[in-house]
Length: 210
Image 1 (tube, one colour):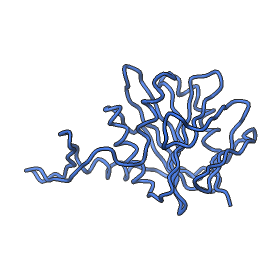
Image 2 (cartoon, rainbow, N blue to C red):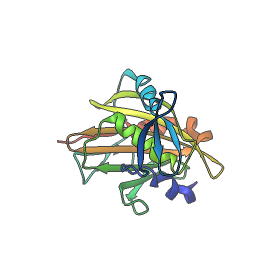
Image 3 (cartoon, rainbow, N blue to C red):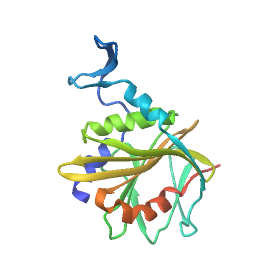
């Protein structure tokens, strides 16, 4: 799993990677055209937005998540369990701050921060479009708004097939007037259910700092 991590994390940069323009088909449908000839219906993103539910549950950090990892770019921190998670400054992806790994397991994490405020729906669309440049069949499996330690975040799961490996990405997306965070975990699809408790504990450690 680790040997393909560079491919996995590179598409989570925020900038749009493919030039695009809008057009109208002869039947009146609005589409988005890309330089490589690929096109898609513009309404796909609008349909996704209408499907975003609000989870009424209040999520809080786990009591065993005692170590506070702080962002250097904005006022955000991440409480994690240091006995379970290792972390390092990101080397493979210059747009990321930190890379994480569940010790002895095939579950990894990535924290990307930008000092630009971006609406969550826009951030979701950008992450999906950039992801498709590496994983063409990438799709959003589920998404919902959550309140985590008092913050409104967008939780997204995306699945796709890369080099014959079925990959799943499960993360939180958050933005405020200081900047934007993509807090992402990834593993193979067949391992997601077994890792989901640890994923939730990690992601629920996100906090806003004074």
